[in-house]
Image (cartoon, rainbow, N blue to C red; front, side, top):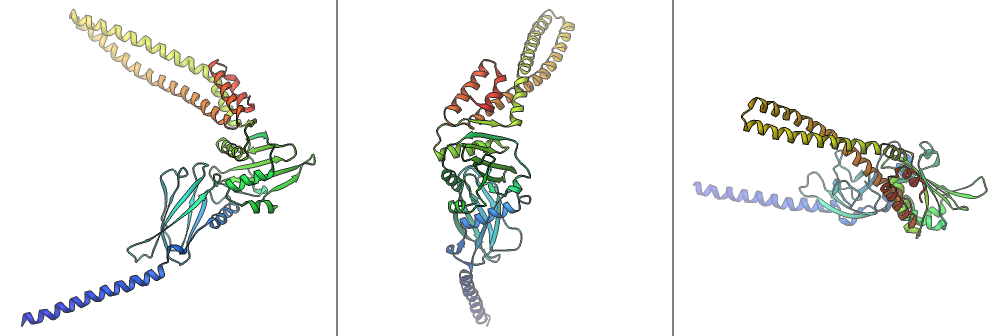
Length: 399
């Protein structure tokens, strides 16, 4: 009787399992039909362009770039991975939305360097009840100066930059427009030529035309002015970050095929630091030499005490030997303290020399061709001849 009852129970359990299996297959097919395919993933240059313009309108509220990722079939985005070479501090940039599930995701990021990069984006999408997520991939090209955003003149004048680099540029305005279109993300070439609000050609006092552009750098929160007198050829970059200015000059000259460029570079803070280092360099050398000589004297005195203490031990004069070893202990503590002071003075001296070398490289990159090589050569010669007072003048006016 028991065996007869077990058979229907087994069949009943198998039927339940089979129904669950069929239901899971049907439910998965429904999710696949509503979940979207890779072809429905929509992100492009237009999305980035619209987000760039939003930053220029709310300059005080945002300190980064905004990339909007959207899925047109309303599948919620669970995470996004951004891969690029040279613009992130780590290998990739990860974003996990914490709020309500949505098919849109705004990714705020700020490239660490001015480099041309291709952004590889992976988006993980799916509903919260799903055990597996769908992965969508897309590539986005980032121009070299994507962190510079076009702004109006009224906003730019709120915080005018103090530093500038001026030089003469004999070139056509079409070349400058082409360089801007290739290296900035806010506008294309056709819009730059046809939109009068983007290129301001104002009548100067002498009747000549001037081209003026204003940007805001989202990385360091500094303004950038680009002024160009079209008649005289006088060109000027006004920006407080010397590294950005060097990148701008090198990129523009390479794009316009400029082989030689002489310029005047006015960076008051850097030049003041160079003058302070130059004025204190002799004193630092003297302090380093004095500490080295004092340490040599103490080391010789330590050797003498060691020899005398060993002699006292040989003749079994333990009282004098104890005194000599006590003196050695005191000398050892003094040497440790003096070495700490000497290493700090040496580090300060090396930091000053390193700052001078970095400044030489930066100010040389503000020139192109022979003026750049000549500046490096003259600066090295001034350092070798102990003529450091000539460095600030060489930095600002070149050779």
